[in-house]
Image (cartoon, rainbow, N blue to C red; front, side, top):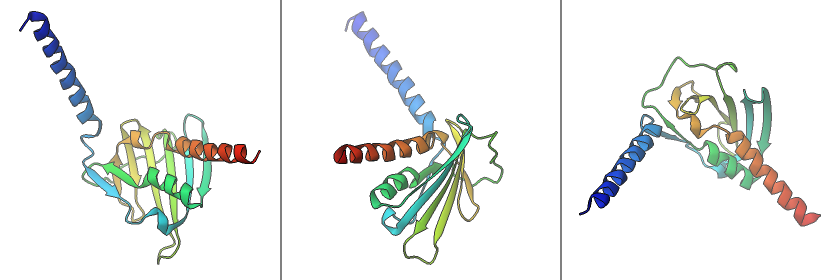
Length: 166
């Protein structure tokens, strides 16, 4: 094996190690998965209030058609959290890049609504609070710009419909 080939192999190994270390550090501490115990088909509406520190504004939206519910539900169906619940966390607008208050409203169940709150502090840190008050640290990047993604989805649907009927 030539010196050039050996150097190439060593370079590839180094790049692979750096990639693996970076990949494992992204979500490695968020080993527990929490998934909703209901499905999109059980919902009649999802209401969402979103605060953005960047825009210095709070906006709200609701979706009530099955396709829109399925899309929004997919954004909030699962969280990857740290193993143990937490009791100290920040909820103030000055502390958060984004705040989501998500209300799932049901068709036919004994409970009419389930609200989950998300406090995003940065790309790597956030807190999710469930209806029973239990809170967990989650990977903040998982919810960064989620509101904008939902708005973009809804706007693209509107533009497609208006182009069909123009």
